[in-house]
Length: 299
Image (cartoon, rainbow, N blue to C red; front, side, top):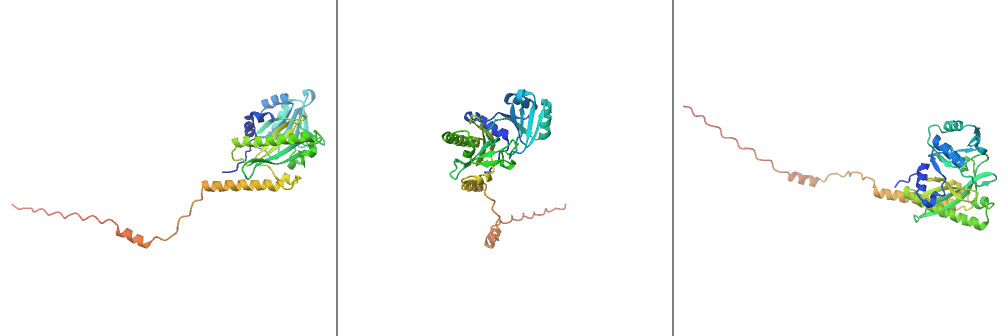
């Protein structure tokens, strides 16, 4: 069984929408088009425009309506620009997007740390008993003036308690983390029904001002290196041991289903058997009888 990465964000989003208990935690998501962009903007006022198959936060653009819907704001990395007309905004977006496939996702007003957006990365993996297990959780904070929190886009990593303690008391924080773990395991199990080859899932969770969790991204081949910075130094080794176990397990299973072809034998033929074959050849049919010549009598 091959371990497959699911690149399409729309396919993963559609799978989550099929679960009644999970769809309430997913921002509205649709394909990119001028009609969808216009309708979603006036419905949610802030949107994220994402590559349909992108990773690492690359190519993500934030757009939104300004106060009183008088103009439109576009932000990409540290670049930002304001437009008076929708057509101007759409033209600029198509310049960035070119011919690539993009989607539109409802924007969530995330909690902040030092006035910068933050989210959580939760790792869920199949363990050595083949059960889904939450193996780690870290907070990520966006770099100054950037719209994404990804570590490889300049974001910084923090322990979850250190950035969330300003928003709630210790007891409620522990309850929140239990809820996040429960939702993460439910998400992995449900997604695994649609994509059976999954062995791990990196779930990006955003929290709004009411501490409601939102599923921002589902990564089927997540970067585990960020967990080297976790306070628990054993987490990274544990994660990698689970990956190696699952890969080996599937490799062995595949070899049993499709064994390697055996090389043809180069042994010399048995000379005695060859002689026996010669002896048992059928005898030749007897020659037909010679016809008796006719006697021609002379009168």
